[in-house]
Image (cartoon, rainbow, N blue to C red; front, side, top):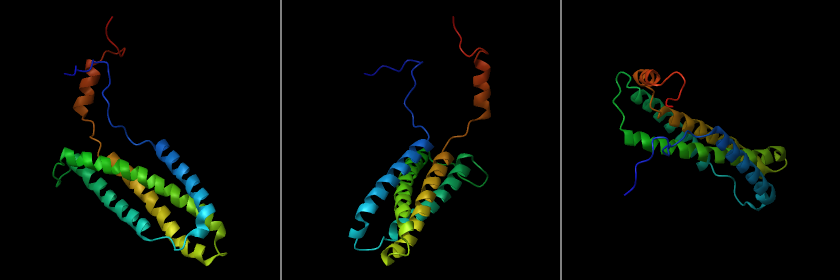
Length: 178
């Protein structure tokens, strides 16, 4: 049987996605993709596919709509139904995965474009891959932003009654006891 946690111990909880983590992931992936593309681009037999960039744009749009409607439902705006807490948990998982995946793909397409743009005009294969690279970068960045927006929309707003009650109960010096 487990013992209850002591009052001063903090319970593990999910934290908001860190912009620093996403930046490091994107920059690392950009460096790796540039290194791989610069060494192996000539070995690619086909052009870059359109499916990943368009999928990321679509997912970003869906998550943007989810963020807007979820925020309205959590705030219980007029004309909206309350949201199921389990659904919000699923949305948070989706949002965290999307923001990290979007950051990784942002880095991938950024590294690709850093190599492709200077090569443009010298090779028809490069020229054919530029549109997919640009749309991929835009789609990946949009997915990252939409994931962050959805994660933020899933936060439960602080109730004015709760914050006042906590401030009234807490001594002015912060800690009590002697």
